[in-house]
Length: 178
Length: 296
Image (tube, rainbow over all chains, first blue to last red; front, side, top):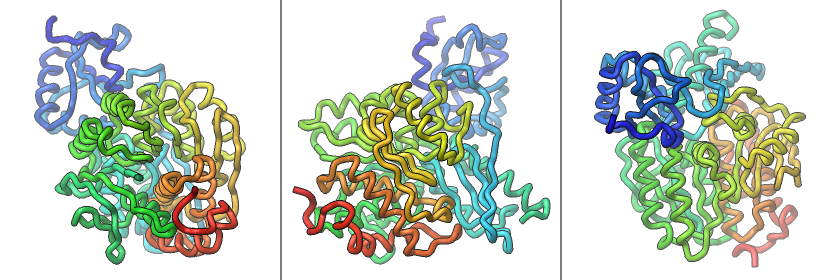
């Protein structure tokens, strides 16, 4: 197919969106380009084929925003996979640190801290993607359960890790451990 | 000249370039106001604290609005790629923007056309794309935290979210991790790994470990890593060697947190406000820089 780029170039993008159907891949490319994302239709490497020989190469850091856009555009996809190495699973481990009056939850490079007495978010830290300072400003001083969700406002993997920390903070406060 | 490039979390913040000044609690660049909060604002504020104290020219800042979708980031990359040889900074510090391997590769190629290659500093997002694109060795200083050190040590990871063996401030394991990063060729020429102990390393070998004063309550405060990177940029622009700049920045950050009597709810602006007092009291003792005007 002439519209396909060689898969070897896709490492510059870092990730692939995989589809069951060629039409879905093409619809995804249109929807993502319209939203301003730099993406490319590619042939996935054989080990990542899912019944369709067409995938969309993405900047993996933009995975959360891209998945949200595909859901909004009602484009069915199978999954997003990183292209490098054999570690396709997103980190699930979080670590909780009790500072007495405050609790900090870490997920990968992101941290969220709330005050036990009020349940309010007092700080977020870590990361360096452009949505992180935006989320920092949006979440500060809000009760953990009422704060905007990084999954809704964020676009990057840093935001996804902040969402992991936020989820754990919600569980902790709702579980009476706040 | 020190140039700091980064995004601002305001969607319609225009592409802005100019010298940084202070207006009360805010920063001003070419008539645009920038809050001194987590992100580029904290990094620029800390660099300005250094240049102000040493009575040097203020940092130049290149800014663009971006709340995560990448448009502002791409404007910054393209501006630098096109003009970096004319801007000709002595130090270029990068941090907040959308990591993009292709644009990072083009930026590194453009740096080769500078009359004199700038000293290149990267933290977080800029470091992610440098490592993922295999360009780490082209950078002079990286300033990762513990989780980002684990990312640099993992040859397969293109972002800390995909690290296979995450390290959370495991101080005892950090020297081994620093060696691994070097073996993978994912380190810059100098590394400042921020954590419970701050490590300064070169070629996989630790050349300094800073752990005093111990202020563990600084870790939750958003922007306290940005301030370290900003100070490293400021001190290298003042003429200190990268390892000296890294050691002093790490010490000064800790001391500022100590003097600010931080809690996990403290905002980074309160830490930055302590920096002039820290420099006045300790800079001569730590660095031998006992007069203003930088290092001869």
